[in-house]
Image (cartoon, rainbow, N blue to C red; front, side, top):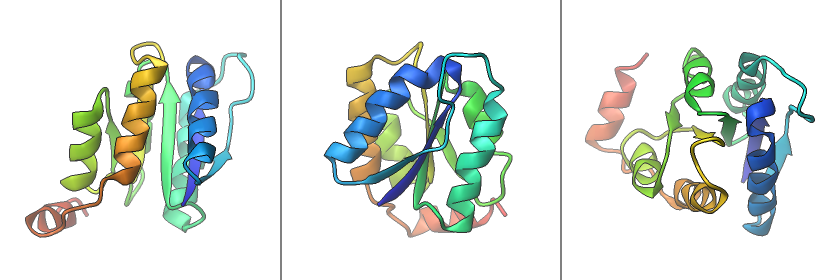
Length: 141
């Protein structure tokens, strides 16, 4: 699966861990930035990842900032993006099963690397249930 991954300076270290995990799991993780710890504006990286997902250049996206809040807010401004801020495996699973989330948001300052890896594993391996959940998602647009 092709997965676009972006972060701001507050999520850079965790992004490195997530990209390594994606490779380990056999996915194609594309790093769209940022690439150093200089302060940047997170909406730019949310735009890059969401653009890849909505254009079909990536199957899914992962966004990381300090808390994940800013990235999720920026991502959800895009049409056809369902970004979910997940802090543990249960929200990761439910965001896929019930909401067909296509962008995962994580906060580096509030989520340890081990938990983040479990969130990513769960999010990527959980299918969308469809049914009544699809009807609800169709109400978004």
